[in-house]
Image (tube, rainbow, N blue to C red; front, top):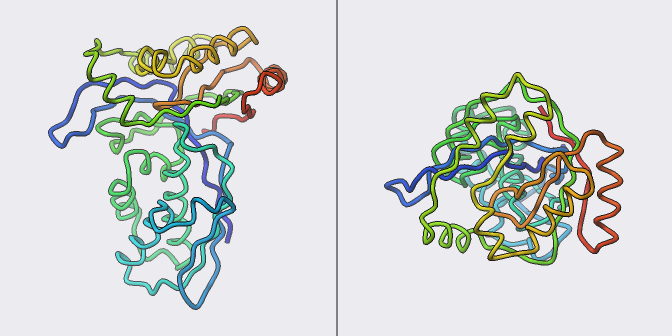
Length: 278
């Protein structure tokens, strides 16, 4: 059995406060995109995990943690081999690890004839990480709380996008610490986007935003330069995804996106064209 694990981007990301459990409260519209990893599940005499990137072959990998959680919860013997083919850059704010974990949960549940209910899968997903429930849903959604409260969004059109990353890396904890230290006013891009769901694509794209950008512009100036390059290449809008360092640009059509990606690659960036999924 082969399963695709789709990356995600944040069309909006508002930080609304800090919860009693220490996590930040979020309001974000997230969407899966066609860029994906692939997980292969096969029968085996014992449990094993392998990956095309050897540094990811460890017990700490979210795929392994998700598998162990699935087998412990379902009571099924762990007689399966997992093979992860990694295509989503990491760490990048694209939810690659979370998507892999979600795909393992859903894939193993299907492989072993659905011993767990949908509600149980989402409970396991929530315990694995803030983005895992959204990746398990694999549809556009308003994400609240620390990301686990999901409201599916039915009316978002598909967008042609380019995802690009430079050399820098941004540890998520460092971005949150800097954001907290600056005590910034809460943005409200999410409500603006939700109010425009029935508008045209251009009005929708104008509403995209990310509360982390003023912080990451200082921590990793390359992300700001990359957003400016996207706009110069014809993007309708361009923003950071998650806490970065990946940047996405929204383009009018696939041809313009492909031309922009080629230009960015010539500048030395990793760049890939994909589509948002509904």
